[in-house]
Image: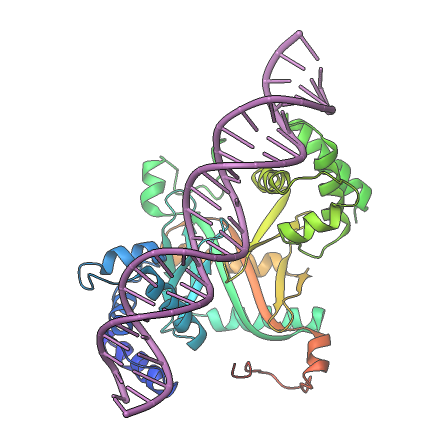
Length: 163
Length: 163
DNA sequence: TTTGGTGCAAAGAGTTTGCATTTAC
DNA sequence: GTAAATGCAAACTCTTTGCACCAAA
């Protein structure tokens, strides 16, 4: 398991390899993403960093995140309202999102590779696409919200209360 | 296998059950979505229908699609640029998206249920979330783009050309 | 007849861009 | 020293909202 410092160094190395400059803003944004796996929106990230970087601009946050996504350091998680949240992508994993509170949790399944291989194979058989990657995203209710909503943890399904 | 007419009728029935009015706009938008599995954006849908509904408003398209998503008739497919595309959700399926041309293709895998059950179980074990649904999305290169890009169909991986 | 829906226009949110200044290399 | 990145503001795109008119039930 790589330490946060090692992950950060590896990411900075990646910047150098792509000949983009290692600015304080980029380092601080990276450091935040490595340390906090809270899948921040641009907004969240901006406010989390405004103490450390008082004249940080929103534009810089947008530009930096777009750069990181292009370099594959970070992945963008689109939600069904058209917004994006970001995640440092050190090790392959997928996500589960709480339908009640919106929290995003990383899932590192032991046989994730087997499931994905199966999925990719089937898809290729059927569509003849050349499969390059997959995104798995689950939705559910996180443990805290289960308690808050008084949901029986043994039940297998759940339907959102009518709005 | 349900015919398009049956799917359309079922969807209209759903509108009635939820006591929302069956307007010409809603019927025509539904008809389009049932007939074309091209995963249109709001823009695409609007232009496809402007002949049939000359004073159709964008706002109506937005409102209607949001309604359909809330009713579960249609699903929203967010892309990593923060945009949304829509898909009539008659039968469970997942999607593969061409990285070159952006085309979205439906995948109806035979044992999709088994793969999903496995995924859900693992996720629950690890996170203790109550899993309610899952979204599987693959990325790849569609057959046409493989030809255009002269990609050997036997190869197993592909990396996007540097921009 | 009575809500609820539509169309229009305006407002709002989120994101990108142009440009002068600053800074990493 | 030079090219690239930042910060600011303005521009732009996408989506929602308020309201008068219309139409489905």
